[in-house]
Image 1 (cartoon, rainbow, N blue to C red):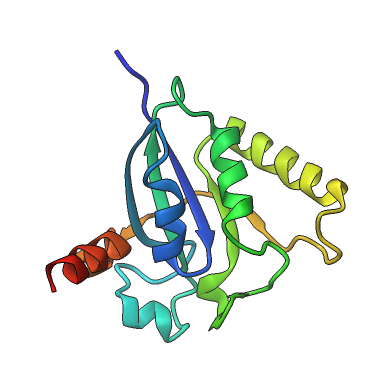
Image 2: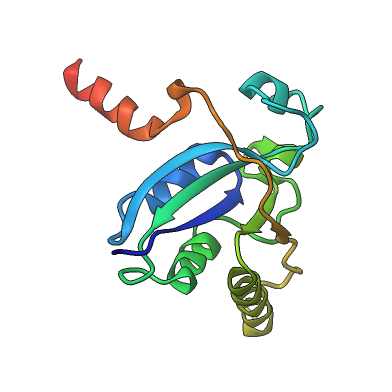
Length: 159
């Protein structure tokens, strides 16, 4: 039987975060949603209003025998600016924070080691502000937000 694991990352707008992971070999599926808040069953407008405390996240279902959690962390660090507090590009607010939600103690240890190694590397002049927190309830975003870039590309090719 093949083992499947979950990884959850917040790196700004969840559309771009999801796109960074969805075509990797060993990734079975991706979805976008919300995690880390205090409000049950939030919708996009709830999170956008900054009343829920949630981060926009991409959840990745992957096969550790084909792609390691460390490799997923490498993609996470590369797909956004981990020194930018509560914003990525033009997107501003705590829903766009840089955060790793770990599902196991092993993921926590790898995330902390990876963050420390990146900080020591000298790649960034500013401090890395990425939070590392235990995974909590994952609230799936509405269907219109799932695989958003792929859907937009398909619509453009039809037009």
